[in-house]
Length: 105
Length: 184
Length: 98
Image (cartoon, rainbow over all chains, first blue to last red; front, top):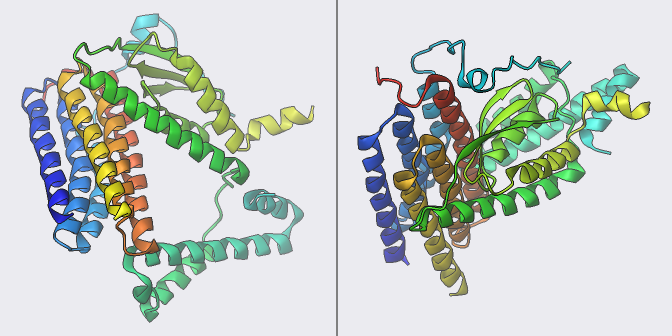
């Protein structure tokens, strides 16, 4: 079983390496962020598999922390420049409609 | 009757019941903190004096801190919602895997607009989150209640799946807007 | 023995989804479609691998911890997908890397 887990972890490492092609090619910064997200999910899985291969249960806790931090990375990306949203966003341009009034309360 | 509904009744009936609801909430907090500690650190670690102190402090904090607006969850509808979510998200994974591995790459991406009829707050947030895990839909933007959704295949009738999800989330939350209408 | 066989099957199935997610990431034509591929395929892949590992877990606490990891990654994945999609929508796909 140990060899199987190791093989699975190596396979996932290979998919991460392929994902790096997307980082290199881009084209947008969103694409690069995507790849970072791929590393997050796949990294968690690799750690879980390695914890069985190496018989190190603490790696499961590392995976847990990775899972917690994945969202922080995405927030950091979205907030990176702190830019205000452009006034004419595409939804208005495409349909020429006004912003919906918020009919919540 | 659910715990939260009881809690709401209690607050309307006054002081004594409110205090009881507060204590009940503290007990739930202690239980949740203990379970979390047990999951993260194991049973022996939970029996350490420091751990017990932390768990009790968590309960005390929920007694001291002001209570938020009750969430209004119908607990009876939750298992159905979870079952639906597991099935639908699994189908979503199969759908995307099939499309990604197909040599012909059968996708026809497009944007659609969808007007959600859920109250703002947890129900709408949950709707947008689960939406991204359903087959072929991805929530892009929310303006008021008008959602912009990216669909992977514009021929797959995504509106029907969205209606279904919305109906189920509707059933799982009490709608504060609805309650006055229902009595009419 | 049966548990081991099931674990192998579940993990292998999970690997297929991870491979599909990466394939989608490379092959799909725009950011939004790639987000679809990544979010959905990887979450199902992780779910299957975690199911497989649950069969090998030492006790209920370990099983719950694995489940907690899956829920966290699920929440992170879907939130991040929405945030990247929204940013791409408002700021355009080809904003410069400053």
